[in-house]
Image (cartoon, one colour):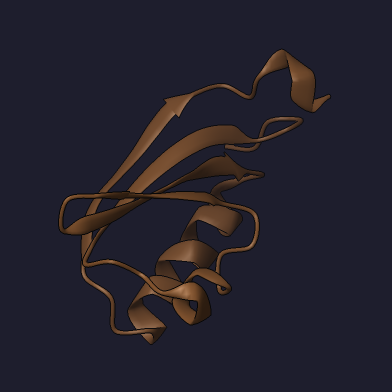
Length: 77
């Protein structure tokens, strides 16, 4: 399920991630919302999605939600 530039995803993780944990997700933008961290960004393909999920698990983080929020923006060409 790959597209030329990937798709936009939003990932919600329980807790406030510090700089060290956020450095594991360099391609994602982060925003703290209450007691959770939202990561958003483009992931190239299904393999990249699974890679991010594996990183979340390896860091012992609690995944709340993974959602595809749209196709890549026109500016990512």
